[in-house]
Amino acid sequence: MKTKGPVSQFIEHNYRHFNAAALMDAAKAYEAHLDKGGKMMITMGGAMSTAELGISLAEMIRQDKVQIITCTGANLEEDLMNLVAHSHYKRVPNYRDLTPEQERELLDNHLNRVTDTCIPEEEAFRRLQGHISEIWKDADAKGERFLPHEFMYKLIRSGVLEQYYEIDPKDSWMLAACEKNLPIIVPGWEDSTMGNIFTSYVIKGECKASTVKSGIEYMIYLTEWYRANSGGAGVGFFQIGGGISGDFPICCVPMMYQDLEWEEVPFWAYFCQISDSTTSYGSYSGAVPNEKITWGKLDIDTPKFIVESDATIVAPLMFAWILGQ
Image (cartoon, rainbow, N blue to C red; front, top):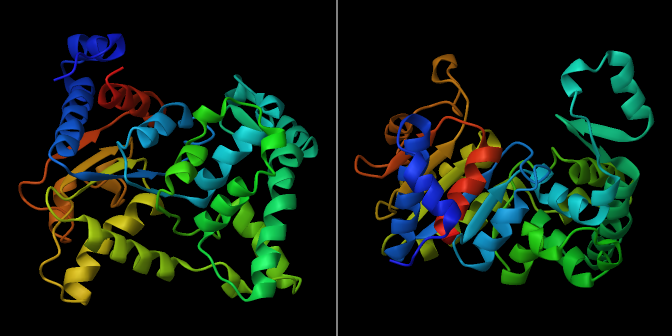
């Protein structure tokens, strides 16, 4: 085993109990899964891109520690927004104290708040819109259709965003994913700023709705990927947060063997969720891993972990361990 760096040594020495121990156990099991030749899906809910998870996730991608990503449309676009408009973001450390009038003032200044961070509408949303809309309309005119992440890859590869880069490009997970041509699943893409903007073009008659492929086509895409990659040690499932980014892809497995009756399809080979959701409200995001056995997603002996904590703290630490930092 390679010598671990100082961050990993600190974690191993200090993280011995409770959620800290769960973090350590899950990170070691993630590493063991990769060492056996397994592959890993990372799913991202919440606003992890605005939390700048790209600083650690991009290196995970570059070092082949993740083979496929599922994320919300917001996470897909917000990594690029941070890339091109970082200096225009505004931090509001006292966000808990804001009055409704102060919140309205942020809106009037075109600053959309995510907890303590305001995304600048003009420099982020509109800067991307001006270029992605041309790519949408070009595909529409040619009768071509692509998945949402494929349009984003076209945007990156066109080079038009490079003039705006405001962070070190190595800290953008989308740039790293594009470089690897990493498969990305984006369920519910319509529920994102770019999804809303595309809808406006459809309503105005400037694009056809079918130009951007749908969630059903993403499930088909994931089904094909999973069948091609789940041999041997299998595919693990590392879930950051809850919501559709976790719910959508994990259902791919039971769909295949229950609905398609492909009985040879293996279960997910590893499961870890970083979440602070509670189990007692019937929420799927808060369900303990064993509940997933009853839905045909995990097996009895699948390594299963929950770290009940803040993903903005936990995920970079786990990635640091997996990267040997």
